[in-house]
Length: 125
Image (cartoon, rainbow, N blue to C red):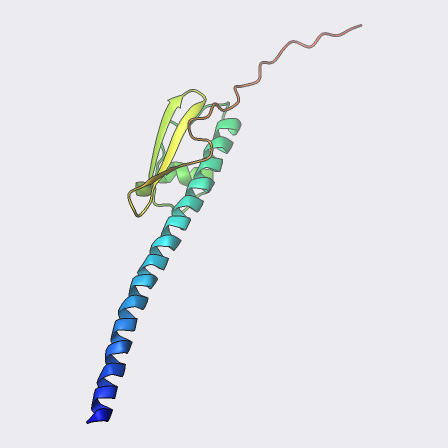
């Protein structure tokens, strides 16, 4: 009888411990997913700035899967991101994390450098 009670307690402890581990595994998966979204946000932010400087200092009007392919980015879920062109040299890129919080990218709401003005060179001859 004592062995049955001990065995039942051991099984109950294992079951309860398993539930706790499952909760921490879910939390770990959520944290990893959020880190992936933040990482993708950084890559997307850099690609937008590179696009801006290599396309005559013009920001893209919007982001799409085709635009990402041109930028060399694949497998990024755009449903997690919101991109808005604020002006000719300013954009906002925000990512929605698992807890419904948003994280802005590094260059969001910052003025990007304007197109350099070419001045006629003077020949001193």
